[in-house]
Length: 443
Ligand code: PA5
Image 1: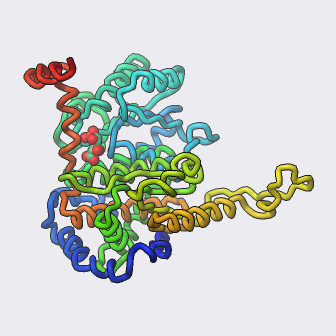
Image 2: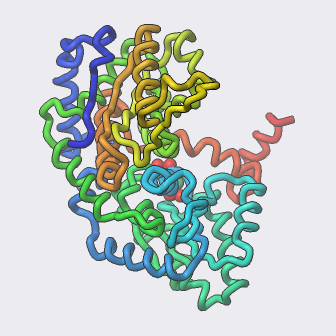
Image 3: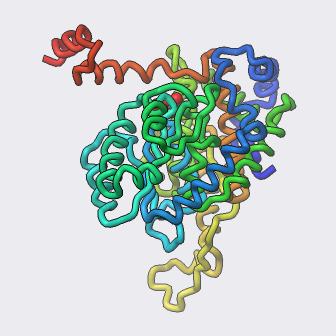
């Protein structure tokens, strides 16, 4: 197994007996998933996805990715939340946060429709000038405002640039198989479509076409991703005290001990978007009914120079989950400097990754001594297989953790509130009464 839970730094915070004390509840949560009898049980399609995915569609994804790679300089992925974070996380983790700037034979990739900033969209549009473009509009519901708005603009751009016929060969839609405005529009226009199964929720959809098409366009091996996820599916399908279930139990123990924030920490900026994906997964799954840990994230050592002070000495509301990547994708050997004017020779004659490791070791000891519990998840390297494994690890841990908390880990009722107000304020038909109420409040 390339993911391993290390509880060494938790010893003074959580006893073995406490983890054992959670075993019955973990088993109950496991059974709720196995027997499909828990809250939100119609959204468990992700559980067997690594083995039960649509093989025909999977081949179509790879074929479409190859065509896209040949056809365009810029690939625009339009989506928000679960319809964007996983793909972006994978590309930054497996390729690079500098993916667009690196020399490569795959298209640059820009993610739009994940905000409503006209400045952001204008900037991407200006980057597209004079470039060949393909677009993937991704929305499970097919009705989400942010991606729908961005897609309207890109659809018009492509139709003006290439004409309707050619534009339709450059537009790919990933959406529900039967419902939603995007599905209707795609059928009318004749776009190639990919589907998101009814029983896979947005934030659990990275291993469907939602994530896999953009990830394949970036040149990542999606077969390997599914292999890694499959390995995790096998290992975490047994209620035998596996690392995934222990991590879920530890989160719950932390919550009961009064921790309010779980901070996901990594020492590699290529993990930063993965942490954004994690934040959505856990935030939307657990933050309800007045409960849940607030999922937060830091990239060290960067954030040790900003939030480090608070973590070490501030109010004791945080525990850290550190993703310890054992082998970096690249290393730099630090040469000795005869003059040693900067006094840094104590760091030399070794790889830079050793310095990063010492930063991790020093920090984990300082934080635990400061009263901040640290859970460590060890990952041997950042490759496709491990990405699949990490995704499945967190998805399963999130479901178990949600059931331990007594919430439905698969709905997101709270997301609707802002939408209703926004629609009302924008004058969407049907929201007239709410609009009057809100405008009164805004006076
Ligand atoms: O997890 C979820 O369901 C949400 O966060 C969605 O991913 C997000 O709101 C985007 O929805 P859609 O794919 O329907 O446009």
